[in-house]
Amino acid sequence: MRWLDNFVGRLALSGRIGLALVAFWLLLAIFGPLLAPYEVGAVVAEDVFAPLSLAFPLGSDYLGRDMLSRVLSGTRFTAGLAFAAALSASSLGTSLALFATVSGRWIDEVVSRAMDTLISIPSKIFALVMVAAFGASVPLLLFTTALIYLPGAYRIARALAVNLNTMEYVQVARVRGEGRIYIACVEILPNMIHPILADFGLRFMFVVLLLSGMSFLGLGVQPPDADLGSLVRENISGLGEGAPAVVMPALAIAMLTIGVNLLIDSLPRAGGRNAGEP
Image (cartoon, rainbow, N blue to C red; front, side):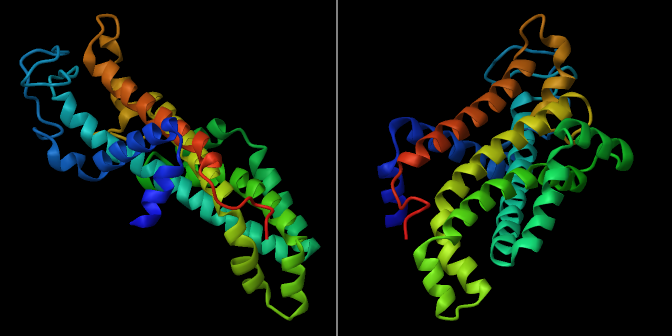
């Protein structure tokens, strides 16, 4: 675990705070449902929008369900879907960028124009059209969000790969007869990992906000399941009285996005080689 100690040691204080917040919410996404004190859909409180108490640490929702159990379950959908979608978009975008960079000008043009066409479609409109056409489901949300943020990941990765492709050590590898796969994976990819990781953090944050917005409109994760955005929407009637049921999931979304933002802002100061260095 020495690499982890070195990584954390190079982070600024804000980055360590962000890392702690991100790790906390990711652990809740994995183990949270196992820690829930009540069944997610069980009506256990006599009063709706009950205040904070020992029995209900985050209060109850508009039906009298325990909000702590609902938030622990909803975090899995919000963080899990965002992580999977951001990872898919970054991985596929980086792979396409490397392929286009080392495969010649006409392939680069075809792939780049396809990505330009896709990125010209407003993300929220595209997501709403997909949900309206095929219905809301977890696989569709994953596919749609990954497709929405694929062009942005591709453009970042391609800009890095094109610059690195002109470096002397890449030209030397090409002259000595190395294949395209070797040049892409061994000579170019390792030198663009750091900015790609920073971009992945941004994609993750954008997906969280997009999914939360869609769920708030009723087009995200559908009942009986719920993510954090759905929890805000279904308890919005308690906003006037400051019910914890509407404040807590909104606060969870804010903490998750702030943590990711703090972490990725500190990544450029975490050391490592610059993208243009051989």
